[in-house]
Length: 81
Image (tube, rainbow, N blue to C red; front, side, top):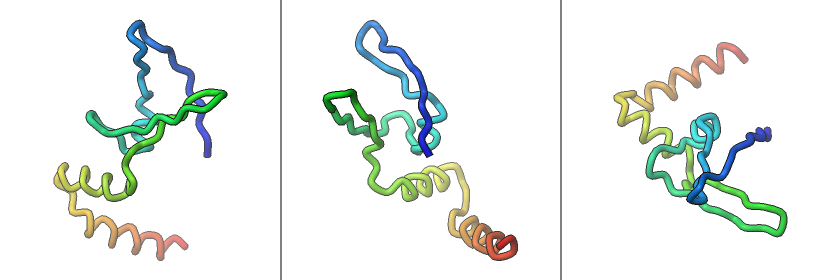
């Protein structure tokens, strides 16, 4: 799935990565990014190699029991499909 979002460059050359994009990539303040330059534009990627690990870490920091949630998700998947 590709989402296209229009944004602007600020006076100091800064851009804001919209919330929907940050949420989908699991980006939080201080997250690393990779900027790839090409002839026709730039591409910004999350520097996190394993986004699921990052989401798990954030969930645990928020007090969630990730292993319990995964087991529940697996059981729910089996019931539905």
